[in-house]
Image (cartoon, rainbow, N blue to C red):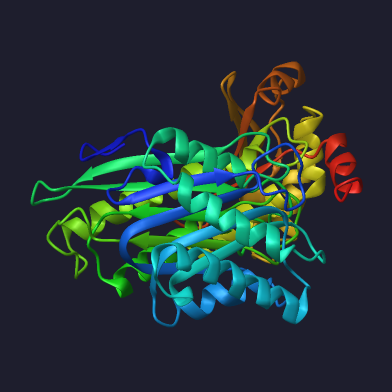
Length: 412
């Protein structure tokens, strides 16, 4: 971590002026909190990226209109259990009623309330439950670590744990700005966003166009470099709300302060992306692929994503099976042209590092030692293409029996 940045407590409510809340509204789940609120005392500029799936959930359509329209928001209301996707006019009406219910609590406009949903596609959300939930959320909101953690838990579906982080950044004028973030995501995760809801709050004063540019670049390098199962969701949303309450000298150009802010935003985004990859449905191991020596960054990304997206490679990681041919095969069908006889591959984990492939052939490695390396909770496949100087990293997880069990029984 850079010297001007440090991790702090507070999660999504860490930045000045932000609060959070969670509530058990009974949207689909019983006996657990399933709604969350993020609220800012002051209006925020927004930036966002959304699913590339042509089938977009109603909340995605609602949020895109705000983020790419007025670009101003005060709050986000999130529910888990039901995705509000493939729900037609009724689904859009739920977005409107949710935004109206929340904005009525503080006397604002529904056009400054973002909404987000995650869960089962095709089910309708009960309007009375979600609007009542909005009122409860607003009454419970607090700027505490406990409130932030509650919100991070409430948005989970098949996730096995909450995913949140917050950092503080010192800018060149010695002012301190904070960034808080939370995500959910475990299955239906594939490059070009994933089945994820992600939210970032910051008290930094920053130009909207610069914020959007930073976010778009960072998402390409982080969330678009993870894959669990090859499916791109209908609900993917990653938004940043910036209320300017840190009172820093406004960041209006790509100078040192912009670099510091962007580095911090990248840090929290990469952390959360890796958390989601490691928490893939049924996963037992984080599976990382780092490709070096590619002709271009685009080639390196394509190669790395091909490896971590391969079902056979993922199964090999799960079985701790050093079947290096699967990694070569995945590189080969990626669509990137290269000389197979130049490729070198290593395994690396907490148990050590070992070269497996040299010049496109097995290196004569020890199978027992390779199995030991592949048996750790996090495994990296390092690839050197010897074709250039570009590099990239992608993250995924192994493919276990439990993935099929979870998704075969998901709606019940």
